[in-house]
Length: 314
Image (cartoon, rainbow, N blue to C red; front, side):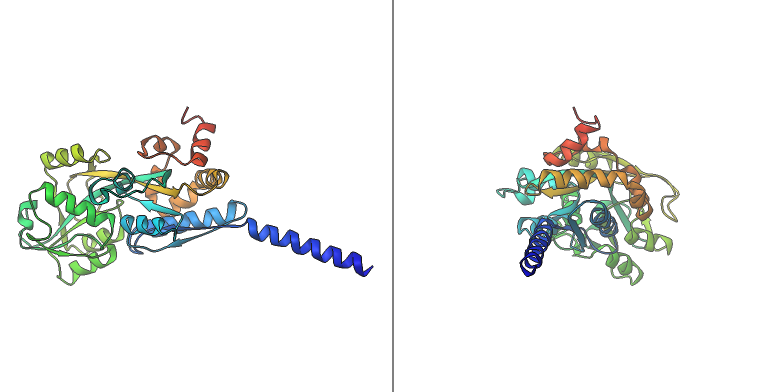
């Protein structure tokens, strides 16, 4: 009898150990807590943990896309929200020249992220040329916002290291800086309705700046992931007119090392529980399977399997 009990205990231990060993852990890198990346990433992590068998996921607040790429390279995270700089990293362009980030794989296309330029009322700034000598928030260090802001300024003939007083502020800090009159303008990259834009506009502290068409076309020519975009009138309080700008796609990337079936399940459950993500951010209404066709790096085989299964990709 004792031998039977012992055998049962050993078998139970083996089964339990196997189950524990089968559990995968995934951390998704996001952005600052004042932006859209973090709550959306946290929402995805919750869905994956609840509905994907043997998977536990959590979201990590980070400095944004550039930081996420660094963390993914170090294997500290396995998934991430990323703006269009994922394309530069994968292809070794701009900041990533000579670097190898071929481990990046596409999974989900989320929503467009326009460049949004706010100027403090009374700053005297009427165009990008007026940025010279002013205090400009260009995004947190190692963020996609900073990289994109620098690209914009250079295209406008402004040296971001010499011609302006650059402030490396995150999304939430930028809104506060306008209230404290610590900055004259900000170049923001993110979803419509992001907190760092809503706060100063609601308080009546800022105005929005159009980006000239020639600069937009110049940027799109050198970085093909951008596209022309118009911020609809009254998106923000005190913004009665449409704002001409450009935008890029926000996507979820994963490392190539994640098993195919895991990413298949992650992709599938994200769409099956899309309503939970829309409840977090209305921008998630723009997440569609068809958007995967616009991801400009290879899709993870697990994601590709899902999109082929539903007929989006042949």
